[in-house]
Image (cartoon, rainbow, N blue to C red; front, side, top):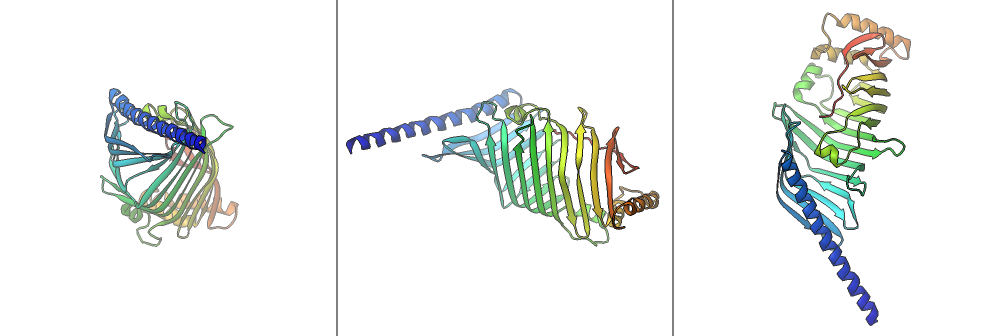
Length: 333
């Protein structure tokens, strides 16, 4: 019995020592990271770093966080950030955001408010802390811009998972429910108010390749750029309008996509009316485009549904044989 007590005491003292060493190392690592960012020219301020959770957890709270990258002009600030991890799995982290925080860019400042935002981040246990997989759930999100617009979301779910068979590639999925676009956007797209105020559902599922891994270097230096997108499914549901897409594109060093995306649009005439009302399509060009779209619709399926390919070639987007304009640049800042 005495030996058992001794073993328990030794094990307890050993675990206490491990937790003390681990919490001290975590504090020093985070403090060092902030100081390194300052040395690189960042505006990096954290009022306090507190590590609690003894004996089985490392619950870290960073207070009054302000980070700004001078190269991109992107800054983030929050009253706190919590990083929660088990003491024996410190590379698996639950991140908890405050109910309000701000993201600033050279163009505008966005204020995020929500009932709850929590993410699980699984990193590889290595010095580079390469991202393995992650999940984020946000409830009752509101985003307000310094330019005067606001958007809201009932719930958003986002997940990533590293693809084992491919270097620097992740499977990325997102689902948004009850998405309310800015009021001015709704008025432009639907001036007659015939559609609901919110998109019922937006869904995205794709395998995306990057130029480099998402790790410490991606945060501290340059963000990896997209090299290819294998879109398994994109769907949008807004009243009578349903839009679905799937396909694949490659992206060059300038961010120009090349490839083909198959789309299916239900109630396409309503979509055309929205495009004309918003100014995306001119009144003079609308009849010609409508005639071409009617022909596309008759080729496959019901007349109210377009089933065609969206092709990206030489920096231009084509819907079937119809040129729509310049292809968007796909660049991560």
